[in-house]
Image (cartoon, rainbow, N blue to C red):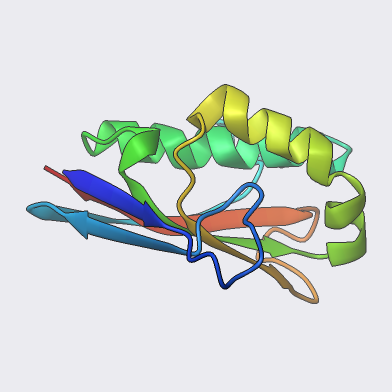
Length: 132
């Protein structure tokens, strides 16, 4: 797969995301929403950064099982139950992203939701990737 990150100079400089990602490849992997569930189906982590770390780890585990890598991510949506808290932790969440997924940022959005399927969950990530 090739992925071109497009960040037009007329838009605000992106921090932790790309404005657009143009991909070529032969397989598209759709990744289901992942929260901070452990292997037993229990939400783990009492803080947003802890839950974000687990949710991203789960998303990347599914991606790797499908044959992809973080660089193959074309789009990720973050659903947060408290966008103000997400913004307050943005620097730390950015470090978590870079540590786990690197700096090839997909197109992203953060959306505030009233609640998630797992009631204790504070954050959920889904997305899709394009593989060679």
